[in-house]
Length: 456
Image 1 (cartoon, rainbow, N blue to C red):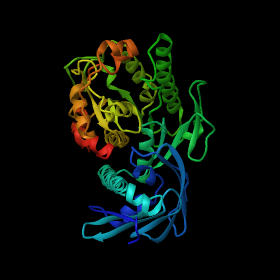
Image 2 (image 1 turned 120 degrees about the vertical axis):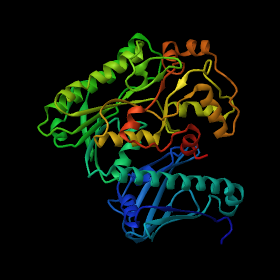
Image 3 (image 1 turned 180 degrees about the vertical axis):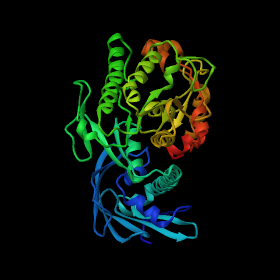
Image 4 (image 1 turned 90 degrees about the vertical axis):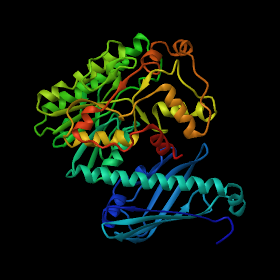
């Protein structure tokens, strides 16, 4: 072995055939699904298939600096594996072997990466342990995602569907789209800009949508909406937040209702904010709504989908809590303080937090697409935690203290009503309908979920 060269390998046995694993890898979205959420990487150019000599061009980040990475595929053996090798990029040398070995009732997948860090032997001596640890946690994450994705698709048993998705570039949408495409489904994104391949234009503010392009879609997932926690809830901001949810939802529902070939299912997301702040009260799916701004917003948001329901389309409203991913949302905002050892509870820490991992968020949406969910349901893990418990658990996962509380008056001063409606609000929601319908969670407890999404 040359000086400075690292070799990292991981093998996992899966109860799926080598051909099934191969098919998953060659479909669009495999790279996105296998990229850990703590990494910043995007595909600039991709081949139409996985063939000898095909190339993929990526933008990755070395620290804050974006770097172009070009990899070439070779030793491609359909159903058995392939190799991708860096021809341009940050490493001195990079070869990644993907091997799928058939076994009785399944196969063994092996990822073997041999690489030379930047700066050759010096880079290997200085940064080798860091690179090795990073690659090991990446492979662990990749194998876990592959196993759970294959399981979810196999359990659902859905025939290939054509699914339209709004909000496809958001936190949940950017995970859902590649999940669906690697599972063999066709995905069409509804976008506000000029549409490209696989996209349909809509302009909710103008009340327009390319209706003809939606004829014959099997299902629609509606995720679009302004970020609730982006700024203080002034009177004007409240109007914007309400308009960003009710207007597009009503436009979409009314448009789908006019189609000759209507989709079977509309999954239009909502939030556990529907219940308002309810202290330690246990909130099953049928609990009464709250009365604060966010609660009335969620009620109007769900009601805006009624035209689709009246037209005979099955409508489901997953009420999400906090979706855990370092790629965005609440967890991403918390990480800098916690990594610096300055994290802790918000306010008293007694408020309840309903949460799900990003993997279960995608899994629950997929479950709803199969027609097994209808009406409103709590799309959260079965074990909510208090804010203080969340802080302690996140600190433990990051190996950092989590002892510095943020006083409630300071939060109210900084964020006004938004603080009361979000970080200080208490919602102890339970997913009883999902459990009765037969959904099986990937992550039921907070600490394993955090360790997975953070690679810790």
